[in-house]
Length: 255
Image (cartoon, rainbow, N blue to C red; front, side):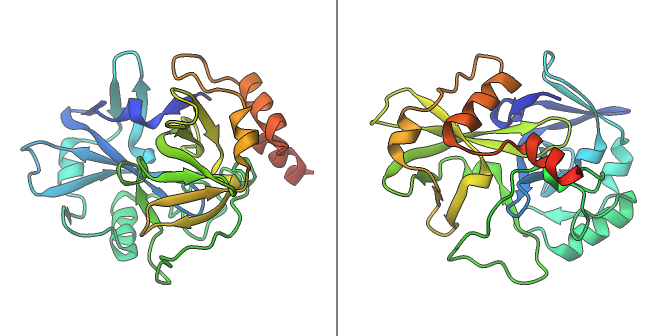
C-alpha cells in the first residue's frame, strides 16, 4: 500500500489490453465514504461526445514511473459499455447498468470500500456533516476531484486556505487526506487533514470546515509533496491533532 497524489494521476495514460484508451482527466469519489469510484477518461476523438468511466476494478497495474495505467479490459468492452453523455450526471440507474454490464459488485449498501470487501474501519469515521446541498434519496453522492480541488477550507475559528490535492491509498482507493494550501497566513506551507475531521460541507458554496482550530494546524506537521508520505509521518500527524488513526480503528473494530 502506498499513499498517492490524485493530481499526479491526472494525465496518466490509459492502456486497454489491445490498445490505448486515452488519459485520466479526473476522478469521481463518493462523499459519504470518501472513496474513489471511477476514473474519468478523456478518450480524445475515439469516443467523442461521451464520458468514459472506469472502475478501480478495471485497473490491472499502475506504473507510476512510466505514468501509465494498464487496464484489464479491451477497447471493445469499453466502447460497448453503457454510454454517459458529457452533459449528464451519473445516476444510480446508470451505475446499476454499468455494474451489471461489467458484472462488478455494487459498492452502495455493501461493507466494502468499492465492493471489494475492505472493511469500512479502514476509513476514518466521517461524521454526519451539515450541508446546504442535500442529495436526493437514491442518487449517488459522487463528486469530481477536479471540482473540489480549489474549495475553500477552514478551521472552526478561521479560514485556512483551499484544497489543492487529495492523497489516496492505491490499494483500497480510499481518500485519506485533503492537501490544504494555507495561502497568505503561512505562505508556501501545505498541511494534511483527514475527511474524518470534517464538521461541515457546503457544496453550493464550495467550502469545507474541519473540526480543528487554526493555531493547532499552524503548528502541525508540514506536508512536503516531494517527500515519502509514510506511516511514521501519518502517526505524527494523528498524534498532533489528538486523533485515533484509521489503522487503529480497524484493529479496534476487529476485536
